[in-house]
Amino acid sequence: MAALVLESVQLKFHNQVVLKDISFTLEEGQILVLLGPNDSGKSALINLLATLEQQDSGRLLLLGREVAAMDEAEIGRLRQELGAVFEEGGLLQDFTVLENLQLPLARRLVAAKEVNERVTYWLDLLEIEEYSHRLPHTLTDGILRKVALARALISQPRLLLCDEVTTGLDDRSSRQIEEVILRLKREWGLTTVFVTHRVDAALRLADLIAVLDEGHLIYFGLPENINLLADQEPALRWLLESLPW
Image (spheres, rainbow, N blue to C red):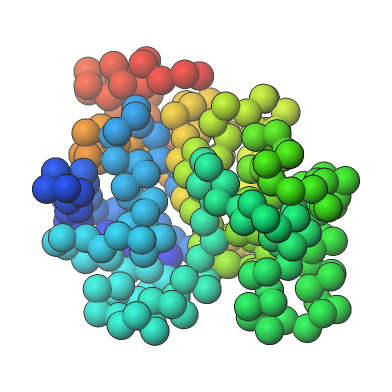
């Protein structure tokens, strides 16, 4: 089944069109990497997929459901199948790392034994156990992103959305996050949309790459084909050369 289907999607923000006629399909279990410069529409697309925005025209199907046809209660249930990690982290500042991880499960009335098992699993996997009783403002950016990733995954979502989660991190932290995402694809069949401006990360992670520029989708396809097409498309070549590797 397709995890995502977009058909001629357009999104406006403050009367400015930020996504223009976007169409693509992503199957379950695939990793899609969104590439593009600042203000290209990457974050707007992630917000749309996270149901934080609604398109002005076109169709969006998330996990087989047409979002525009859903009421608030249905959207609320859909959000329980999504995990999202944003560059700023979004952790609750007055809660410890441990409490931030426990909260999504408590809201779902998960039994205490299972809560402890899941929390322990993610603290160990992401090597953040030693920070479990720390508050977010005392953590480095790398640790904050790992905690935010753990919180997004602890509810076992079907679709993970990552918006610039490795931006500004050292190579070790970035690679560790990438390795977790690849592991979850192998072991869970997790579908992921991963936003970055680094071409090297995209080539390591992606089953498919989408390149956005000024709200337009200028490439959607296999990583191994992107350089071949760029040789024929000067605009795509210029964009790839302007991004870090």
